[in-house]
Image 1 (cartoon, rainbow, N blue to C red):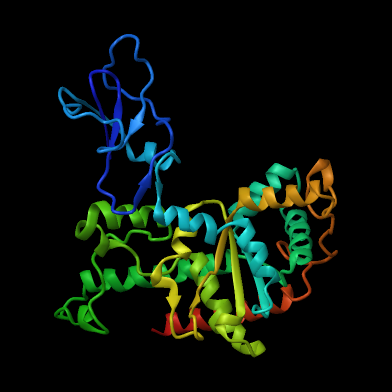
Image 2 (image 1 turned 30 degrees about the vertical axis):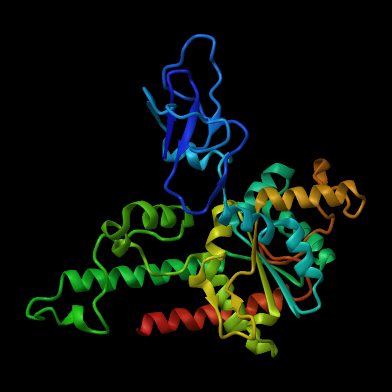
Length: 348
């Protein structure tokens, strides 16, 4: 992306995005193009916008905007982002929990998100998990699970993929490259992680074939957890994938984009299909929801004034466990499914 500034200090946005809708009222990023005295403020406008005069492009200077600038700026609103605002919001989260179509509502929290909330509240990880479980149960969730299980399985599968690629690239002496042809040729080395949706989108949009073959084909821990719950655990309790709502709490907003990708949508699951993960909340959004409910008197204040549901973890409960009634059963089912998947990976 480029900001193109005229000699008078005016700035317009030059982007090659088909889904670009509109900019913010004024660009918040510093502009390095030279400006005449008396015009210290840079205003963002679109080419062809009302008020733009012919000949404005004469004597323009280019101010480079880095990728970090774009990722840190919320000025440019795209159609995909506007959809995520409505489909991946706290309001949608509450609506799904109260919807009669969902027979089982499971919230999955990443260790990083839980640690961030615990630090903010001044609580231990165990106490934070227990209080969040009680709070979410009051909203309609049936379980709060740790995503660490899926992270472990992800690492096992990535290690297996790396070994397959390494053996294909370095076949044993006398093998004649047979290892590379068994079960299809693995990808090239080095093997790059694909767990970060922001990195994946950047690679897809800007790097293309020079990077994509090196990306790991293993799902991220978030998507693995959704797959385990909907297609391994749900059948054990007599539920179809579309009858289970999986909500993940992650530290990064880009996880919303990952959950919305068509790669993780199964059109054959019911009439409307089902996603591996239905909705993603950031740790900040969950914390805001807790504080809103506390302000409204629907949740008790936690220790040190932390606005968390005051429902402590049971004595003797394992670290990271919650108090929702089906947490133990769901965790056991997910653990068994993960063990089976890991065994299948090892056998392969």
